[in-house]
Image (tube, rainbow, N blue to C red; front, top):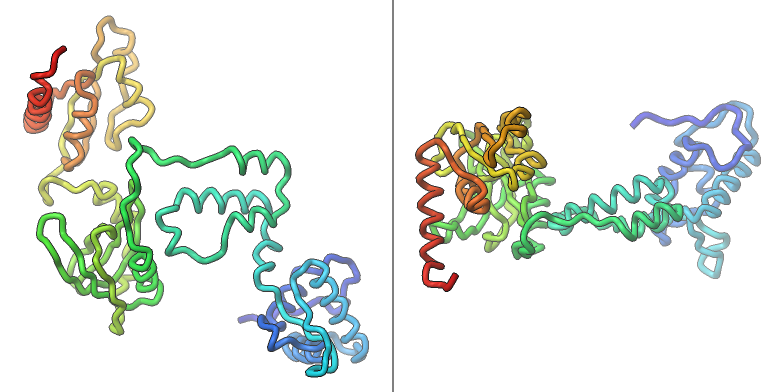
Length: 357
């Protein structure tokens, strides 16, 4: 680590200069039992960061006393008072105060909102509590209004998050960070209990659950596993194949945000729809990923139906998405999708055919 040197002529302007503060944070201990007296801090500081030539020892001690007093005023250091066990006070870092000292209000709010957005991943994140950081960052009244009144709400119909064992998520994150393999006991949706020895390549949260992306060997392609189906994770001693060139964003994109294809090797399809004007806003406000621009001229033509076309993967969620629009979306092509949607809607209609209208 490069040595940071304070300026030759020490500033008398307070608050303390940033380079001096960073130097002090390197020198001071973190635990009360290791607290240092002023002379011990002075010796350690100037051994690590040599002073300008000509400064007298008493001047160096005066500088250190000023630094410590400034840090004490900002609640960055705590003091162990002199008693029968020690002849003079000792100083150590108040570790919990360091993050908030460097925290401004906008960053604190961003951390807090990010933590809420990433709620399913919280057990795998660091222990620092963003709400405390936001509180310690001296938010303005207008920012406190944002803190109290702005919320991030997941999309959906009110389904609860999948039940994921916090220890399994923590173990997956530990494996990812430490570079060790895991043994994964997994309940496959179709194949029953399985055991996999995996190198963990990444984690991704989606729609109330979390996926572990891993690979079984040097030549094996990565796969993703839903953590709510995991029955156990054991961290192994073997080093993982970390694949430095692995790009999790590219993997998620290539796997269509974890929307599984009906057939693994199938090509994208050309989806052709007629969408009723009353439902068209769904495709304007949140277009399909491969959707063509909607013809503005079509919106001014008399009639209730507007063409919408898109190039999309044939995933297991495609037909249910189209079913959800029922009588407001008509599939024109391809024939396989039209047939699948038609059969699903007919089956649903039969379930309610005996109900009085």
